[in-house]
Length: 640
Image (cartoon, rainbow, N blue to C red; front, side, top):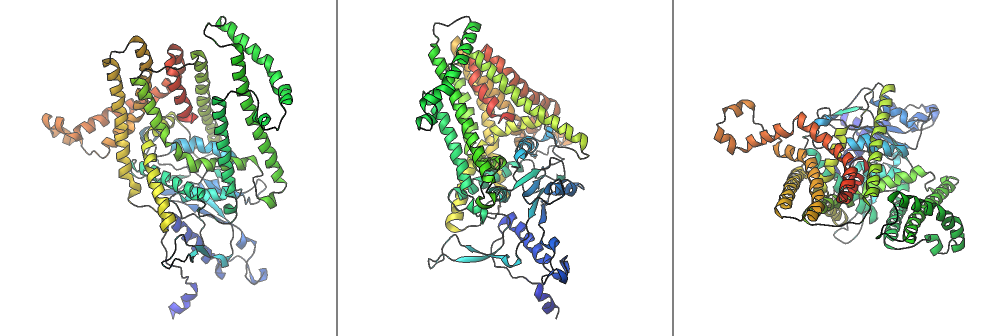
């Protein structure tokens, strides 16, 4: 009798795999939808219609996600919910979700050897991306706005990815999916769908949720999983097999427009450095006449370029015997200015087209604000950042090459010094401005603001050189996952085996150890190879810069080799001297005590910034610091 009474509340679901975390999120979403449809849970009355629904029943819902190891603080809701409303109190349907940073109190910045708090992303990158509403969801600590949906559309027919035994390609009945189940990063995939339909996010930079972290080295496994998911998601979109539907699926060409724009930009850079020209590409393709370009660009620029050249020559004391003619400098300057003007013109054209789309935004569903394009560029970066995993290998290999082989470069060391001074100033101006912004926010908000410290910048530098092998390994495993998904319909939404954490730890341990050993070997080879004075001057900068890279990765290397060492002080005192010398546990404890203490950490923490400030002046002293130092300042740290 009781079972018959309860039968009307039963819902039969097709038997299919859980699809990992996203499958659990979708189950809860659908379950709450079923519960809300019950008559006793509706706000409406029979006077509102036969379905007893009023506007409150049809309003969107807010779906907050807290992973099992995270606990919301009391002000989480009152800090996030206002982001979904306009200033006049009306609901803003274009806000897709809010995201608060992940915070693990047990890992203070000084002891966060593997950047478990992912501090630079949450405290700097996310703040910058939030200027256009482009912060992607990170799963936990996110709150999503989910529109009211037709209860009759609870079940969906989805075409199967693989054929049955008889060769037929049939459809299958599945539960409605709000969050993507086709890759390991359901948060990024679901965020991309919202970006494609024109919605945006809010980043709430407050410590609204405290988490209990896994073991610190588990973060390396998470890095490996994130890259795997990014590769899988990227391949799904490129091959048109992404698990997107509706308007997000129809707006897929927007991503291709961003890819095309990036390819054209890289092509224009290659053209500028490999081809001599003084006219715009608009002239070459007949969009502008050569006479018009001369009148508007070349002639007005002739006198400023001539004046700048004469001023610089006077400052140098005249033309050097090995210098080039004025015509060469004029053409080089004009070529760069034309390149910049072309980029500005293209950006202005995009701005005009975007504003034209605003007039027909209800029909075209194309970007009608520049912030939308910004969010698409950020999504493009989320999908393709793994492509640059080779940069850490290249730069370490390049410095090793400079340390063992004499090399020659042709540039003015004074100009390079000023360039590096400007880059250094911009890097630290970005950090200082960000810190000032946090200070202002803290003065008007009762909640503690997550601020960026020098430790966070240092840890980000470490991560750049440390995770290259993990990303390279993930390229292989992510491609394999995609092929299993595409050809066999395998469920790749979940993960097991601890995110291959042990494999990732072993890769990083041996990779960072190899860097440290190689830096020592470079110095040994420099002094034992009997170089000439000129060779010594050319090879020494490579050894110095490579040594600073080795110092950056020394902390995580020692931590990974010594973590879990349980040798107590009492046990140490009882060990005979000979046993100590032959015990790996003893030497691990010694290494941890010497290098992982607060005093040594402070030394390493400030050596990096001091080195960055010294680099421009080292270039003035020895120009061979220029190439390596310039890339270090541009590609590593806050400048990245």
